[in-house]
Image (cartoon, rainbow, N blue to C red):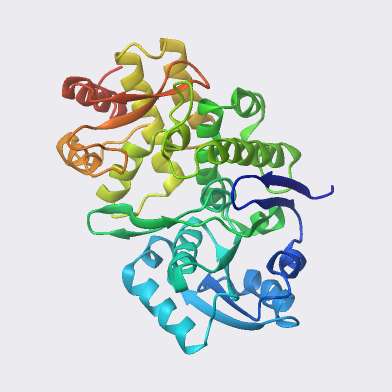
Length: 366
């Protein structure tokens, strides 16, 4: 099957390419003006890194910047170390960064590119399903602090994204399933066909190389592209649509769970639990029908994602949600649905509803 090219318009247009064996496309994305390329990659991905470096070596001076794995990479100390290496290597504004890894690598590598000399080009080569459908597209970058996840960051659109589906063949099953959390989320906020595909497909058939997984990936990326192009910097959408904020559906509770678990839970798993929580909140506040709210639990569970959580108290999670990026002053804001594919914002819900929704999430109520 030929590569699929999904164009991202706007002030800094670029392409997202979905296909197999895409490392050879890197020089055409980076161009001839680039002299040095820093490849940001977690330790332990040598087999994935090798073809990327090989594709770059013939045309550029290549500097490999190894990172810790996962969320451990998203710290100020790691960013400083990368900046110092770029300085020692003499990186200029005509040079570039290539990220090779999952969502955490994309976040910190993109942040380093956004902040070095106030912005150099970056190309993302996501190696996980989560990275392909979420972190690599849209230009959000960030690192974590003790106060919460992604609270320090910048908008910095990539020069290109190469989603090489062949890289998913060695991805552990648990990581592939976690990535489906963001895919199913896209079905609820914008593309019901994603939900239909999940509901009508044997979950065991959702494997690397399957046509249905490729369709899910491409559909989820299109959802994100459509939202991002309309509202790059999360300033708001039109006609009542929350704009880019819609992509954070389920994320207010998800980030609170991640923080409570010291980031030991996979992001897609937390998103699934967060979406179940906010669907219950929407049911209680009259936004969703019983069937639509129940569909959240069944869709996420069908692909193998968790749909309940009792690992922290409501008080602990409530405090964490208060530092969510969507909050305004002391008021909590949640993206909810007025029906499948119709996101809106619920501002300042009653604490009684927040607590009752959590009781359902933890399984204390039916």
